[in-house]
Structure formats: C-alpha cells, structure tokens
Image (cartoon, rainbow, N blue to C red):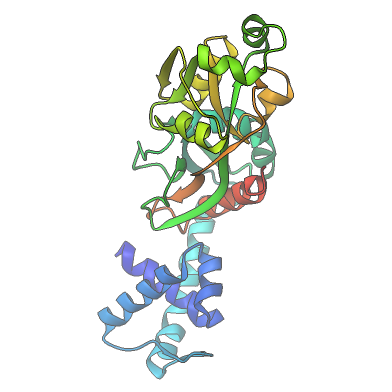
Amino acid sequence: MRKNLRWLYTFCTVARVLNYKRAAEELFLTPSAISHQISELELQLGAKMFQRSTRSMVLTSEGLRLYQKILPHLQAIDIATQEVSGPSAKQHLHVQLPEFFASELLMPAISEFASNNKNIELQIEGADINEHKNPKADVTILLNQNKPKAKITFPLFPIRYVPACSRAFLDANQSGTEQPIEIINRSTLITHSSRPTLWNRWKDYSNLKMLQPEKVIYVDSMFALARAAESGVGIALVPLPISQAWLNNDILVTLHHKQLITEDFYWISINDDTVQTKAAKIFVDWLIKKFSNVS
C-alpha cells in the first residue's frame, strides 16, 4: 500500500510537469528512480501512462484518466494530514555522520538551520567514516572512496591530506637549519586504520625517496587522528578542508605544502524510505548549499 501510494504521488508529479528530470528534482529522486516507479506502476496497471519521444512526453488516454481520478484524492490526503498535524507539527530527522564532520562543520552551522526550520527535530548520531552503521538513519554523511550503495546519493566535496603536527612537537623535534619535512623519518606517524597506505601514497606524490618513520599508529577516527597530532603524539595526515580551522588557529602546523589528493569524497546518502519526506529534502538541500563549495 505504501509503495503504491508513493508510485501514485510520483505519477501525479510527472503528469503535472511532463518531464522526468524536473519531477526528479521536485521529489528529490534521480530520473532513473522516477522511471523505475512509473514502469512499476504501468506494469501493475497493465497500461502505459505516458507516450514518450526523444523530445516530449504526453499522457496517454489511460494516464489522463488516472490523473484526473486520483489527483483530488491525493490532494485530500495532503490536506487531511496537514489539518491533523497542524502547521507547527514537529518532523523528526535522524542524521548519521562522522564525528569530525559534525564537530568541525555541522555543529558550528547548525544553529542557522535550526532557527530557519523550527519544526524539524534533528537526532545526530556519530558513525565510522565509511560505514552505514544504523540502517534506520534518514540521512547519512559518509567519507568514501566510491559512490555509496544507496539509491539516492549526492557528492559534497573531495578530501585532501596534508602532514601536520602540534607547534610544540615541531619545536621540540626540529633542530638547527633542518627542514620540517626531515623530522618525518624519525617521528611517529599517525594514520586512519582504513587508510593504511596513505603515508606511502603521500611520499610518492611528494617525490620523497624514502619514508622510514620511527613507528606508525593507526586510529579508527579522523577526530582521534587530529587530536593525537594536537597532543604531540606524532605527525598525522589530516584531512582538508575538515581540519582547516585547526591550521588557521595554529592548533596544528603543516610540515609540507604538498596536499595528497585521493579518491576520498564526502557523500550524502538518503534512506530509501525517507527520500520523499519534506524534512529530508529541506535538510539535504541545506547541506548541499552550505558545504558543497567548502575548500
């Protein structure tokens, strides 16, 4: 029943705009998802709803009849739910994201979203950088090298890595005219456990002949990685732009200007059962507008 109702809402939107791409933007779906839902509806009804060509789309006689019959009922459902819930009804949205993204980007900006969307209650949950830990989350932000498996995903921004440590660590380990980069080979290096080859990739990218650190420490959190560097444990490849404020405020200092560009990307993934809710659309629209141009 729920799936059939979703198909009908999608059908009415396509029938109104007569364009898959515009309908997809309005419903916060992909054009392929729109096409799939219309195909499923046509298969269930045993009739074609649209006549499509390379340049245009029109309703068939069966499609027009269905549209005229069900549109008043769907509008009545919308009116009834609005009357029951009231204009100030709270909408709950469960958001899952890496804690470093939350602390450095989302939390400093969240008051702006909250003040403009008083009816949306956010539940924010931390997660590993590249895992869907809670399948019930409505919206997930994750750091991944490949596009997530969820049907509806949006890219936010790519990640770059730069070697950094605390000012105190640099002062204590740098001697004379020695270049900051030279202390790497006699220091403890810190990296994320899911990115074990990152330092070697940075070495090759920076055209360094050798990388022989004292030891390597692996951590399972980008936030813990940055905090370890801040505490003087060693030198970390910190992610930019997430760590930019730490560098701007001299909490961390860079040891080399070379920034490793990888396949890592922050993605927004939307739960299939949440994709058409108004709260999810508002929040994801805000995320994309706020953070897609972060550099």
